[in-house]
Image 1: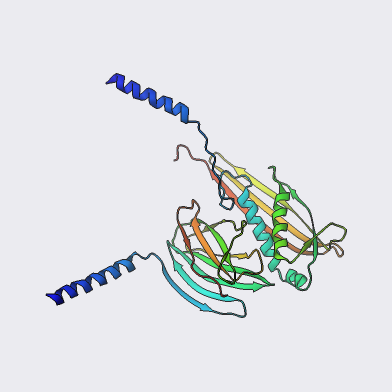
Image 2: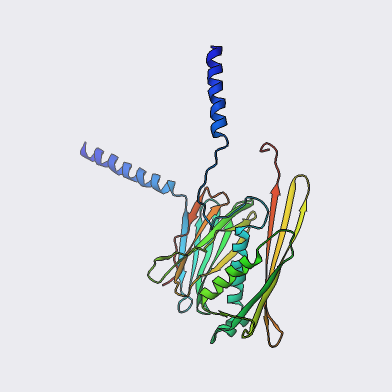
Length: 169
Length: 148
């Protein structure tokens, strides 16, 4: 009996050693909500882009501006003021992509542009033994290059919390 | 004897219908009213799993179609959900876009939030909203399309 148990145990240990570290690659849904950790992720980028485009296309002054012509915009930098490495150009690329598809704007070089798009991304992080709280604020602005007037501005706030648990408790 | 069999058959049919009706988890009431050309507003109530989807509205703004809906939590507990808009053309065919992302949303107990999205292209005539919990284990979809 003991010999049998020893044999079964050995096989189980061998199987664990062989397959315990096996990794599996799968395709995921790029549009799914991602909550791997509290760092800036794909869902944050998508939420920010959607909010900015929605706001820009529904603001009354922008509706008037785009009613009879396609204004030429130029995208300046979106400054990353967080402590994380975040590719803010990727955020603006998604915004530009959506705005171009709407057919309401043209994008060009600074020389012939009428409006300048710029902004910043900031964050506040707080944590204790049990919780990590990350707050992001993305601000985007549109400025008339010739008059210097701020024509549109929008913010998107995102809060994420990580609650650390021990042994699932 | 024959009438007894008929009566039993009738009772069975009624029981079957009652059973079917009893299994339906969604109680819905829909009222459609057209606001102006190309726009529609629907007062729809879908009570499914403690969530009401209300005031579905589709309208053209500046030549672009915008869908809007109010999500209401009928429970006392906070719920973390996610929603997604899908768009349909004038023929009622789904317009497939890669950038229609699931968006997380928190609904506090008995709370409600209005969510909206602009269709990615101009030639859109309707939309659907899918809602699921954050772990994507339960899902339900509104069955309304805007006016064509």
